[in-house]
Length: 341
Ligand code: NAD
Ligand code: TDX
Image (cartoon, rainbow, N blue to C red):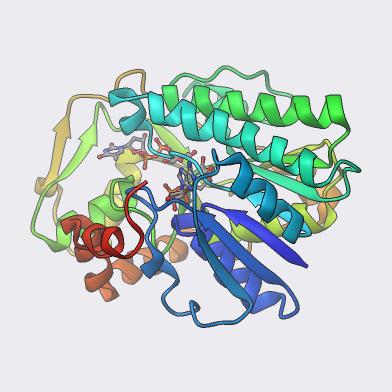
């Protein structure tokens, strides 16, 4: 199978490329990525010479380019997006452009190239489209039947992209599937997200900025478990269906921070309580019964705290990667090679 992957130079995308090449020797992956601040070809340095992998520098909003790529592939996994909530609060426009218009452009390109609707399209989305859950009702979980109620400009743009994907599946009978996953952790995550930010700050001797009262809860899943789930949906999912993906692993930010501090041999004095994120969602938690029951997916790499230990160790062992990212040195290097978007 020739997979067209969008956003393959980012955190989840690069882990997906590596997983597919490792577990499906007869598959090929073409990665379409415009290299925003979070797209980093260094994330794929170890496989860039694999002849089953091709990189295309381009934007998912470019209809002509996307149409050409749709002709050449057998299936699409769409991960490209603006992905950070705090950035969406500062400037929502790139979120609407890439997440909503980009998704619509890709689907139009697919319609043009494949009017018969034979090529499967997995739209990778987030649990944040469902809004948030109360802290005092642990029995409440997000599932495929939860109504959409996005809170942040990021989650609103992802909800918009999900609606476009749903509408194309319904209106044109396209074999589109949507996945909604909880928080991921693992190698190559941009150090603006809480785990790599906190770990790298501590290595640098800086404090960790904990938002608000630290009681907000996230459901943590190892990125490779998410990638396995996306591959499972691509291969076995039912067209038109939606699948929630999660680790059944809820942790408050305070609990997460204490676990990171302990792994790094640091004390509580390294916590810096800071003003809360605007509109900060309280709790996310996923009921992944459907994908487990219908498609046989199970997380195998997310057991806590071993999975967190593994992730923390990766950042400790790869200082050159995150120092390049934090200093912006990688941006200058790739801007010379590819230009900026
Ligand atoms: P990321 O920011 O690390 O990577 C995004 C990638 O998309 C980058 O390589 C970037 O260059 C590329 N991109 C952005 N806009 C583009 C455009 N217009 N054209 C081409 N390429 C573009 O994000 P991530 O954390 O890897 O997330 C990947 C996907 O998974 C996103 O759709 C996100 O909403 C979703 N998701 C993420 C998480 C998580 O915890 N990180 C959880 C659930 C779902
Ligand atoms: O400095 C920080 N301090 C802090 O307390 C940062 C960056 C975050 N936090 C808190 C906010 C959240 O409650 O940690 C929690 C996790 O924050 P992020 O890493 O920014 O992730 P989140 O906002 O939960 O969104 C993530 O999960 C769902 C991804 O960024 C999204 O792309 C994904 O869809």
